[in-house]
Length: 350
Image 1 (tube, rainbow, N blue to C red):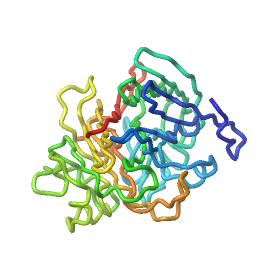
Image 2 (image 1 turned 60 degrees about the horizontal axis):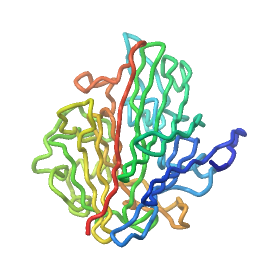
Image 3 (image 1 turned 90 degrees about the vertical axis):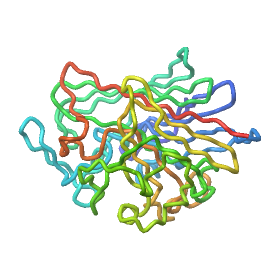
Image 4 (image 1 turned 90 degrees about the horizontal axis):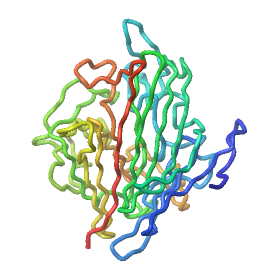
């Protein structure tokens, strides 16, 4: 553990490092439970950081588009910045046009989490906890959240989420890592080849709120069931790609068992040979191709991050779930426990 910095309010922020026998290294800070670096080898054994981020705490605090952060209490968008729960309307901050995004103005990504380094049979681990008070950012109930990051011997980063509440509330947690398998700051991810295990996706309106439809991917740029370069469709004139300025959509994952992580996606970068596979217990995954990176942010490598320089694979329940009764529910009752697991597994192909 090392001191990463001090927040503007005077809170100390620590940085922890997880390692394994192969030299793979994951760094994270207690501010936002944020992954700051993921160093993995290419096919020649050359290591690079494949996670976009900053070198200074003040950049995470002032300017970050959720780089590597834990996101909650409710990830993604809630339409109209309000929801109804047990007959009561809860207004939220409209921090994304007319909508609420990623937990509010000061969501979990901006909180300092308590940390405990663990050593488990699976590998090097870090447990992070945060207690969100009743009414924080408009959400009801005191929510106690625990997230455990584990780096395994087979180069998998496992994220185990759990939460309990003392009153009826809603919960949807994810991690918002931005990946570039060529190396952070190296340029576009358009050469990355992606596969997504989904027969359907959730189309959106002009505010990027789901319309409620579970649309088939067949015959659209969202049919990524076979390996497809990002470049093949990212400039399509399909109305949904135009609305999102690229991919910024939730995929309805094909699942047989929500208790065991199921294959969700695979991304391969042909030059380096690096591969990232995603497995999750969540029913959805947001594919986001860094469409709002505009060259104003300078990363830890001293390079600017531009549109299309990374992709996010945010495992989740569906966006706007509280307002879409046909979507899987994100309600959490007292006495229940929210639990979710996502695995990001790194490898290489020769």
